[in-house]
Image (cartoon, rainbow, N blue to C red; front, side, top):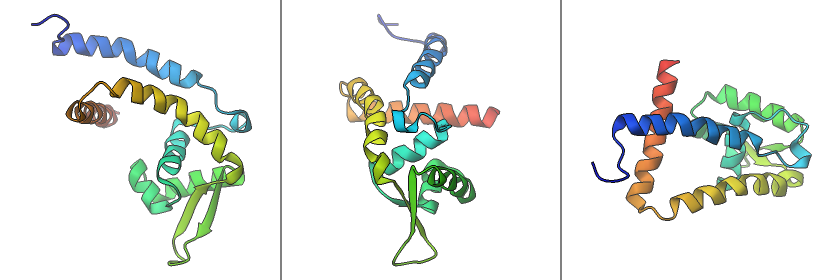
Length: 151
């Protein structure tokens, strides 16, 4: 084994020690002042991230990306809409379709909040090749699927 190489057991140990620190650091990133009074869960952060990166989306599109039922997204959107974080509107082309966006009053604070994590990921991923980045993301996705399967 070359210097610095990990076997499966060594890599597993390293990740089991690292993951709680990563989660703990992520939880300590405070939401922006206008959002602090809200009870935002990680699922809200993922929903907001999709809206920041991809712009306004339909409820079904958000559900597919978040890998949850449309009813779950509808509940999250309703909750965040009542609190003024999100806006909902009918799609002009299809009145049955609801388009969700971040309310203008919160766009800057949500974008700034997500930017810190985005910059950290960009710094960590920059030295990797495109294939290494793909493998890293796919490995995290496989881990998530396995943890979910075991629950």
